[in-house]
Length: 64
Image (tube, rainbow, N blue to C red; front, side, top):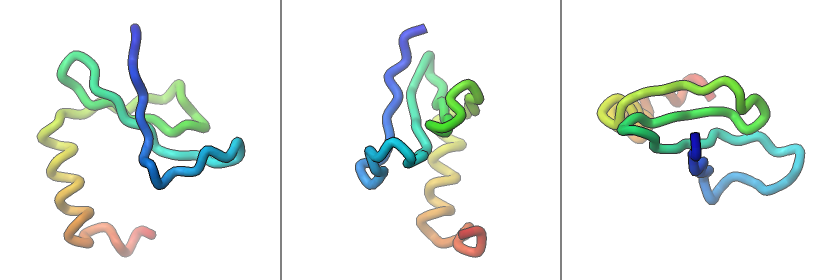
């Protein structure tokens, strides 16, 4: 399975830096943490959009 993982331009390239990586594959959105790449979360574009919209509106600010 050839998957092109992408990370935010705000992520560091430092070796000790961990980041969230995203990819699109067969119509799904895949997510993983760079420090644990074997665990992959799958979702749909619509569900990811709903999450991102909520994050932009501050719905999860209390978690950071």
